[in-house]
Length: 503
Picture 1 (tube, rainbow, N blue to C red):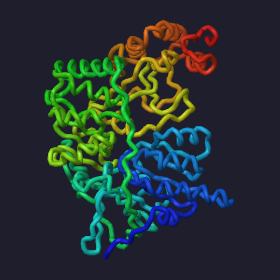
Picture 2 (cartoon, rainbow, N blue to C red; picture 1 turned 180 degrees about the horizontal axis):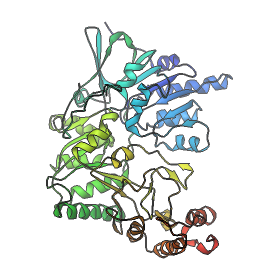
Picture 3 (cartoon, rainbow, N blue to C red; picture 1 turned 90 degrees about the horizontal axis):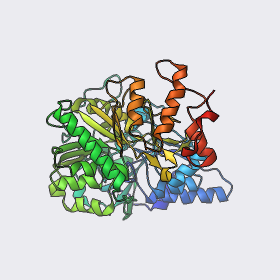
Picture 4 (cartoon, helix red, strand yellow; picture 1 turned 135 degrees about the vertical axis):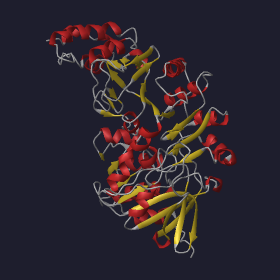
């Protein structure tokens, strides 16, 4: 049986108003591109002719401009989950023009299976190869796992394959496809080290559920990384020093920990700095996204093995991996997001989580999603999956942003994604706030030490005012958001006069 070849426009024509599509990919890596772009065009035509057209989108994480950006701009999205980084999508979310649910990435496939999010009508999957074996089809994914196994199994109307020639067949076998069982019949996930494999290298479905194959040759919509700067270099050195001190004191095992790092230029730079610190032992990675820096560290022998959900790398780096698959094949494995971010595995194998904060407050709570508590930046992603279950959980951030006008250390976070119960350390370019074994008031003094010097007196003044209200945690509620309020009114937190707020 030959799989039916169709155009991207023909595939888009199958997707009806109000339906839900489940996409492969995790970050822009591995996301179908030609069909979503055609869906956006279809929406524009439908709207121009006075007909409603909005669909729902389920993904592993974020996507790229051809999906989130184009469809948000075309007003084609009714509901979207669980995570995004696209600036056009962000604009429409913050205008409340579409419904967006920010979810922990480890929960997405489970919530789909539980029916919490409604039916999946279509699975649209990017593949580097597809083969027929008897009455089954084997789908070989490209640069990411995401929620692909779940949406392929549950799609009521069928599966559309984007066979993307940009991803070379040499990457066949890099994936370990395993879907968690439904409750209450879940069995243990038998991963005890980053390199373990427990599934198949492909998604297996009934061949007759493949409705069409769209052939294309489109690069991943990869984002370039900013070069490391003095701030990120110093943060990386502070992280390395902190881990080495814990290693020498016996607080972490002599074999070291598996490292996890969030997505973005800052995280890429910090992990690179760790790898270049000669005193840090060779280590393995158990993470959700693998970026350029750790790939180079694998080549250098510093990273022994790496488990991830996606290769969120530049296209030059990705092509290099494909060229050298003989080297990477036994060192690198890509998993579905519910496995890469699985709390059970993270807790079992001993992970040091390294994630980025938008802001941290003096008591150790962290905001990783919303600017001034209201404007969605990206989403929580997998940071809580790792933070809540890590052997050692670390958040990093530069002490200021916007040229010093915003302090990343504040009296009280304007939005809280991670409570201080799960956070072991906050690290800026000014040092390490080790929060372990400290009360809330002790944490406050520790965290103020790593704030920018311009803001330390203001934070100490806030503490002095808040002491009048006593309690286990001191807060002056009328002044807790004074720095945020001053920024919104005057454009610079340094202009805060707490006397205006203290009551």
